[in-house]
Figure 1 (cartoon, rainbow, N blue to C red):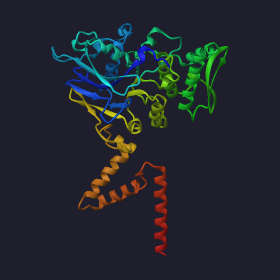
Figure 2: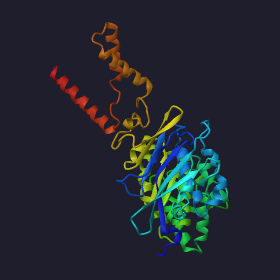
Figure 3: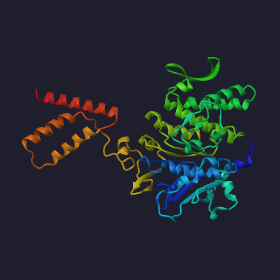
Figure 4: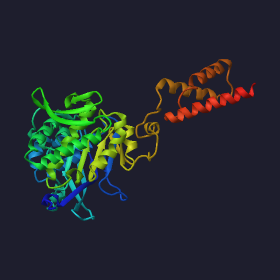
Length: 430
């Protein structure tokens, strides 16, 4: 199949270096690729609120401005946003983005360096980044970016929605109206076989995503208006009446799929073509069960997409077994970037929560944890008085049923062992 000239080169992010950008002071880097990895890959960025997670995604999205059509999107991005506030005059901000590019059918990547200048409030390439082949590399970055506010539009598409990162820079921006897009595709499919295939691909994607919750999707009329209905265990439900978590997923996923259809109109499966997806708060409004399976679903559905996401959930970190983990930590008036700060492969959720990644002191509720610490202190005493012995006995009684494992099966096994031990003890005492 003939591939359009624009798609002869595809690119992925390799590394981002920042200096004097927003909350980032001294020069440091975020690594999206390691020598033992292959593209595409995952990077999960975690950290407390206000540690620069969104800034990193916005910085990467600046590469959209250097695409062939990038000039029309500059009005949506202010260079002054990236300047570090309150610093001494004369400190030059640095944004250095390393991109790996490869031609279709080849396996050798070529590194390109983009040094961005935001010192004057606008966004331009530094004098070191004026080589003519950089535009080709930038065009190879098929970037789609989604901010934490992912709302489905109520009406038709707008010009702002043509900017693939609008919701990342404008929290009031809306994404493509998924219901309207499906209705239009269904109507036009009678004349265009290609649109019928695209409609069916979207329906199939959503059915697989919600396989245990939604059993069918129907495009029909409701109150004399076209509508998309989802069949749940409670009956047919309109898209806008679904739970917020479902709508959040559908909003960006249909928007992303629509963009891939536009980028790869000649591909038999546009969803399997190269892309870069930036998502702020991937775990937003999503049930833990969905969080745990989401990364695997996305990797299989979009096999050539590089995912760079932020998250607050240990489930996302735990399920991203092969991902690059980036931790952002406050250090004085700046932020420290730690690449792969801890090996958490095969760790339990409570272990991930109490690691340096999330910084919780304990996984149990505070009252129980306080009692555990008090009991531990009493046990360490060489001698205990009568009052302390009574307190220890009381704590032992209170804490004896406290779970020591997160697995239900393990809890049941412990219960069986306790019963067996009690029966043996009763038999011995007869």
